[in-house]
Length: 234
Image (cartoon, rainbow, N blue to C red; front, top):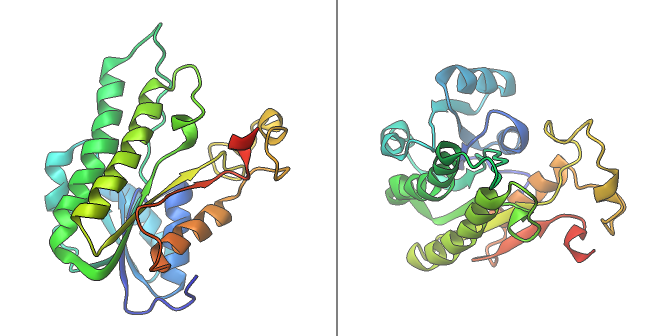
């Protein structure tokens, strides 16, 4: 991965916590100017202040796609676009929450696509886009119907946008269980570790490294990269 990204401009949507925040930290440390978004201006401001120089906060809610273009209007150009915003939705058939399902489908499928649409005229010829999916697509669980469906939709978005936005590169990352992430750290993940050939869970640093690989490697295009330590094999 490039250690010097001076002069580049990145947009990281969902950059105030978890994996998104770690991606912002890494890109900014290498000289990239990073526009990071949170759902509120306060959360975005707090993350930008914590991370420090080179970060510019934006308020943006991907579940409200009609507001996205205006929220991104101050971004001058885009070399790297990472859409890491997610929402966890345990939505079972017994207690199906229509409102929660519609919000997640809107955020992931319409919101992701509208963000790319809003920035399309500012994508440089060498620009790269990385979208976040997830492995519920291939390893569902009770309550994952909406999550599994939208992660499948991310595959479709990658395939479509790779063709439509050429030569801009479009890829996705599908992380496994990230052991040191705020959501998973401290949980009993032994049953998952036992099914993972690596013998441990993947880390946030490894996900960040994989995202930067997708951003930097100019031969990688239209790829959905699974980073799970081999979990899907067992």
